[in-house]
Each structure stands twice: as C-alpha cells, then as structure tokens.
Image (cartoon, rainbow, N blue to C red; front, top):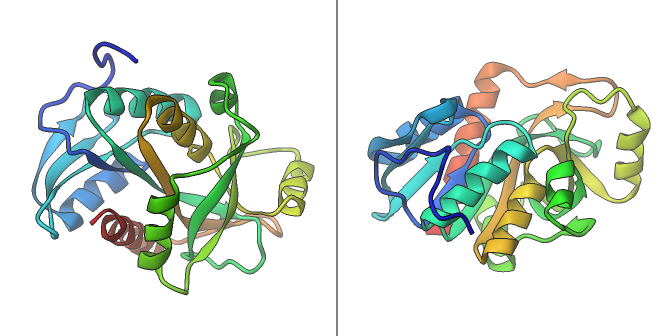
Length: 231
C-alpha cells in the first residue's frame, strides 16, 4: 500500500463509495446529475473528480480513471489508500454479443484479463467482482440489463479481429479496457469493486458508434443504477 497519493491531489473529502467513469467529462456530468453542490476532489493530470451529497443523503465521490488499465491502476490504488472502500466502474464497452444494442447496460459478472496491467499485478485469467455489489447492480439495473462476462483489453483499435471472435466464443458479451485492473487492485487492497457498462459500440460487423446524445443518456443511466446499488 502506498503511503501517500502522488497523482491525485485531493481538494475535498473522499467518500468511502466511489463511481469510476473513465471519461473526465462523464465524471463532471455525473457529479452535476447525482450530487448536491459537488466540490472538485481532483483536477491534477486532467483526472477530474468530485465529491458531493447524493440523493440518498450520503456522500459520494465520482473520480475519472482515464483510459486503460495503467491509468486506472494508479487512480484506484490512490483512492483506496485515501480511504475508498466500495468502487463501481461506470464505463462504456463494445458489444461482442449480437443481442446487445447501443445504450444497453451490462453488469459484469466476470472479467477476462486480456490486458497487461491486471496480469502484471498477478491477476488470474478470470477476475470476479464483489458478489454483493454485483447482485445490487443487477437488481438496480432491472431485467432490461444484461449480466455476463466481459473482457478487458489494452487496445481500443485492435487490428486482429480474431481476438474478438475468440473472446466471443469464450462467453464474453462485451469488451472494455479497465475492469480487470480495477477488480485486481481492489482484490489486492481489500476493497470491494464491481463494474457496470453501457454499450457505446457494436462490433459484430465493423464498428457502429453511439450518438453523443444517446451516450450522455447512457452515462446518466450508469450513474443512477450504480448509485442505487451503493445506497
């Protein structure tokens, strides 16, 4: 465990429960939608974070992780050192399953560690989120959400399409970049972590990208469901 954070420079209190979007812009959006009078928690290195009082009356921190496992590993390590105990990734993903549509929510029940960071941290090939948080996410998301295995990769633009076919064959419904690392850091440090995703790209036949308005709506849905799971 680190003795003090080097990359996060807290300017507000940290809540024990934290939402982890990758995108700093989504962190701001969720802070505005979910918190009363949010205060900036961190702005160093462009990793915007905010703390405020959520609708359930409790404090909530929303902290961007940046893109990819290495950035997420630093942020989560430092958040846990500062006192975070329950963390939910609220990010986007590419759909590997043809049964998913743009904007659909996915609750990760396992993460295939196809990234470098989680494996460098000694993670297994399959990483599991906290069971209680995951069950709470499934209840909060409702029957319209998909619960299933996801894969964490280091590449957004992967020139090898065979990898996606292999992951789909192994049961992965979606691909993203940070879940495995977040779950592994939490596992190492005794914190609880889970993952909720919204489909931003369809990958079964090329790439179909979500529109900006629909992406913003999906981001808000991620925040609402994750907060309900933490309440």
